[in-house]
Length: 88
Image: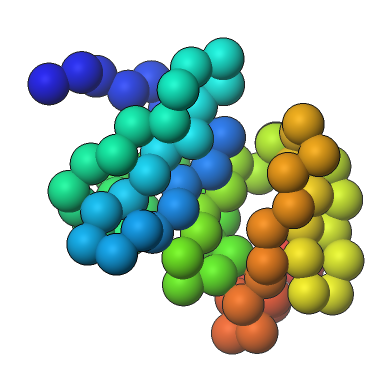
């Protein structure tokens, strides 16, 4: 069991019954867990759920548009309609 430092997390993605944790300077990790559970572990002022399938680190966001955000490294992720208010 590897410990993941929250400061290394860029974003978290739901993939079927797994979640994929995308880390800075490391390969993504796939773990068996729910988005609900993982979001309960993350400090809420550092991480925001932007979509039913994505949680992002706030400080990794470089641009916010109506339907998508851009993260460091030019990664773009969709914003779910019901989550857009969380970014305001």
